[in-house]
Image 1: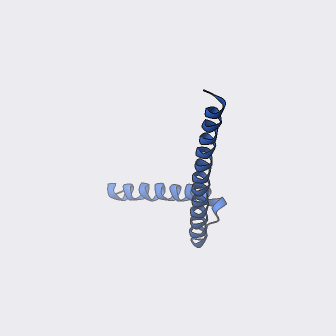
Image 2 (image 1 turned 45 degrees about the horizontal axis):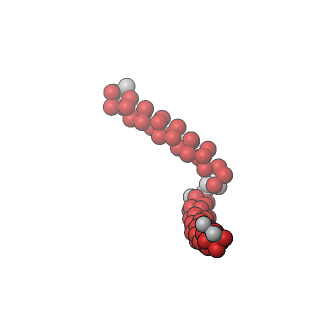
Image 3 (image 1 turned 45 degrees about the vertical axis):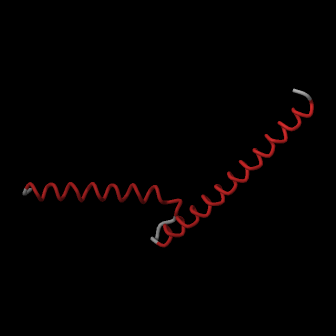
Amino acid sequence: MNFSDKLNALKDKLEKAKIERTKAQTLLDSLEERQKELNDEIIKMGIWPENLEEAVKELETKISSLLDEAEKAMKGE
């Protein structure tokens, strides 16, 4: 492979890398926009996104408790 071939191969790789970078940036922009939309929806529910994990745990505990109550009621306890 001579110098010209190597240079052309490098140019091709550079062009492919630029295309991949553009694709990655587009995906990142899309994901950031979706994250903002989801955060807005969460806030509308009265939960701050940074407290979401805690809110989910509270809901899981409440659901478990309600299932236990329902199970006891079905057994006649």
